[in-house]
Amino acid sequence: MAAEGGTAPAPQSSSNSPNADPAWAHGTVVDMARRKVQCKYCNRVLSGGVWRLKQHLVGIKGEVAPCSRVSAEVRIQFCQYMKEKETSKANISRRRQEIREELSTPLRRSVDLPRGRQTIDLGDDEEVDIPRDGDLRVGPLDPFLTRRREKQPSISAAFKNLKICKEKIGRATSRWFFFNSIPANVAKGPYYESMIETIGEVGKGVEGPTSYEIYNKYLDMEVEDTKAYVSTFERIWDEYGCTLMCDGWTGITRRSMINFLIYCKAGIVFWKSVDASGKVKNADYLFQLMDNMVEEIREKRILQVVTDNAAAFKLAGQKLMDKREHLYWVPCSAHCIDLMLEDICEDPMVKNVVNNARFVTTFIYNHNSILDIMRTHTYGRELLRLAPTRFASQYIALDSINGQRSNLIRKVASEEWENCMSRHAPTRVREKGKKVTDIIQSKPFWKGVQNVLNVVEPLVRVLRVVDGERRSEMGYLYEGMDRAKELIQMNNKTTYVKWWEIIDR
Image 1 (tube, rainbow, N blue to C red):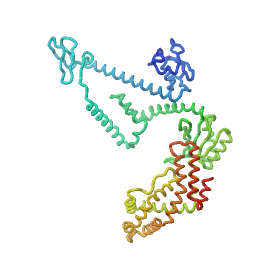
Image 2 (cartoon, helix red, strand yellow):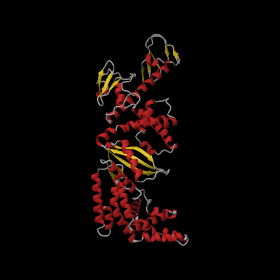
Image 3 (cartoon, rainbow, N blue to C red):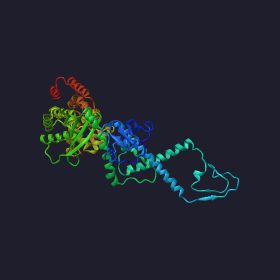
Image 4 (cartoon, rainbow, N blue to C red):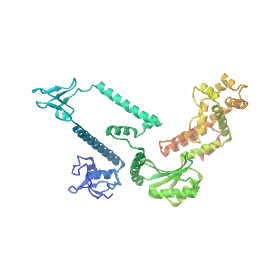
């Protein structure tokens, strides 16, 4: 690990001039005779020439100490540069091996030629020049001792061969996707094309990695690469600071996990996940957990801690601010809007509208014949759609029902609906069907749906912004909340004053 360790054989000579190797732009020569160079970023003196300097900039552990001050752009640039060099070496070694095998191949045939003749025709497409008079032994050395003139392939033939090769690769990779039930959109990932290119560069004769190698050797290598990548963010954390985000999550295994993420100017980094299944997640436990994370990341780097607005997290955040005076606890904006929607849902009028809409959709989707009638009148469109959050799902469903209002009214007045609700149907089905008919044909129901949407839609718009992948500036979010308040006031000037009070809090 020491930078001044023994000299290793380097592919790049340290005597190269600064104009010949891009690494010299990031280091200076200290002692040319002893192959010592100095990094321009951390001023560390390295033994081993320019190759050691590249390893130092890339951060290859086990060879030389990584540079702690080099930028992420320079590190990524030299990672790509060294990978290209390694690929070029592999191609040269492979070609040398092919030549050795070709030279070791026994002679295939011989041809006797009359004296004075200088060429021999091997076919319609090529002609071989004989270097001197005499017998020609056609063998493995012919490509190096003779000059071969071949016809240049036409453009159409070249494109045809390329099309055939692409189709061959497409069939092979698609078969692998299909057999392993892998979604096709995985091919849109960032490493799919690089995998195909690397396989093409290496060529034939190389076996793929085994499952053991993937989950052990190469997984460990990826972990080390990820750690090295995350370490490049630390300089940004020191310079600009960062935000520690804490989020609770329960998976399909019913394990209760608490995840910690770091958000900074360069992006979001997943830091750690803690299994809290056997713990009582009260304020004391959450405070101790967050305090340990702050200590682990370093207190001077963290500007604020963001959690949801639950009572335990809120009290834990207050304790953290009391202990560490320069830190601020901030509630999650998406969770705050979720709580607003929950409070609005507790209103009796809203609860009645939501329950009636849920009764209609549940009845329709529990009976296949009725579901077919609905799809016929809605032209194949469904009533229920996925929602971005659990609290907003009922409002997304209301919007879907409101969009199919005329189709639903036409459905309950159709002959097919009357046949389903005839006396041959079970009594419970007829009773529920009559209630569904009354709800769909009720004008107060549709008026209530429209009123709820008028209040909730501006909040759902803001929720999609704060809970989406794209991060928005705080000023934009404040403006979005102000517009939501104005829209709610304008749409409900008298009837829904208490809803406005909930949002204003």
